[in-house]
Structures are given as structure tokens and as C-alpha cells.
Amino acid sequence: MASRYDRRTTTFSPDGRLFQVEYAMEAIRQASACIGITYDKGILLVGEKNIKSKLWIPERSEKFAIIADHIVVAIAGITADANILVDDSQLNAARYQYKYQQPMPLEMCVHDTCNYTQYFTQFGGLRPFGVSMLWAGYNKKDGFQLFHSDPSGNYAEWQATSIGNNAKSAQSILKEDFKEGLTLDEAIDLCIKILTKTMDSPTLDADQLELCTLRLDDKGKPKYHQFD
Image (cartoon, rainbow, N blue to C red):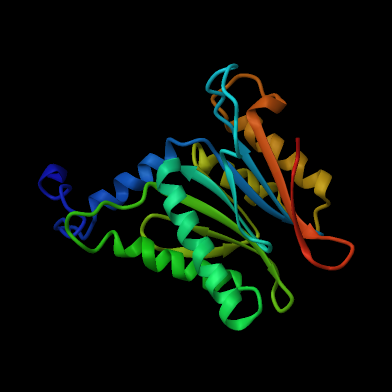
């Protein structure tokens, strides 16, 4: 039955499903995991890194991208698709900053990108983006915020969440163990606990992880920091 309705994003199946969007979601479930956790002084993002080769020279982070000084994203899915959305988000944030002379609110940036993502599910000849993103951001009104967006164009705010491989298992652990007001060390320990239990690899070492934080510096401005 699915094969009759999965060739276009514009065709609903009799039970109201868009199979191409669901297939994009499945591509993300096969991707390396990302976890986002709010802690007492900011947001921690952790990504599972695919080690391609010892000869490979990483020119940039595989899992994280900076949208603006106050917005960082973690990526799970097809990196080439993510690059398009990152470029679009960076442009939106820069235009807002130029026009209004103030940083773009995180939810507005996420909303604009999700509108762009949803466009690719509504017209023939296009395919959905095969990427989900965790958005970490800060503004004076709302403080630190963590959002999740997916290929359908939906987004939601979370205190802690996971995307990518074994995301459901990771979410179950987060529901049990996450509590408000975690310190950075406690948040890192929780992420390592989750990845140890959910990763396909029998062992977990530093080469398999990327960690970054978004927190305030001494001047009260948001600062991105990636751990070596």
C-alpha cells in the first residue's frame, strides 16, 4: 500500500500519512545521536561523532553550527541538507540584526527555518530535508531556550531532549533522570550515561563525542564554547 503513495510529498495515503516525510524522519533515526540539556547556567549540547578515518582532517565541527552569537544548533541527519538550513538561518539572523539592531529571538529564527522546511513537503518535485536540529539560544527576556525542529516543519521547546539514533531510549532516560537546576558536570554525566546505554558501540571514549555549551560570559553576553 505504501508504494502507491510514497512517490510524492504532495500525496496523502488513505490513512492520512505523508510517507516521504516519514522516510525523512527515519533517515534521522539512523543518524548519530545528539542530546540537548538545559543546566543552571546555560545549555549543553552533546553529539555522537562518526570517526571516518584516522587520516581525516576535520575542518569544522560535524555536529554543531553557529547561527549567531546567541544561537547554536546541533545536527542529526544528512549534513548536506543541514548546511542549506544553517545558511538560511544565518542569513535570517543577520538580516534581523541589521534591520532592528538587536539579536533575533530564538523562537522566531526557528519558526522561519521551519516555514522554509515545511515548504519542501508541499510541492511536487521537492523532497523533505533529511535533518533534525536542536537549537540552543539566549535572550534577556526568555533566558536560555532549547528547541527541536524536524523535517515536517514542526518545532517545540524542551528542557532536555534527544534526536538521532536510539532517541526514544534516550528520552526515556531523560524523563527519569533529568531535573531542573543541574550543574554542568551533572549534565555532562547524564549525557555520558545516556550515550553509554544507547550507542551501538560497546565502548565510549572522547574521540566519539563532541560537546559544547552556550552560557553567559563575565559581561553577561552569550558565549559558545566547544570542548576539545
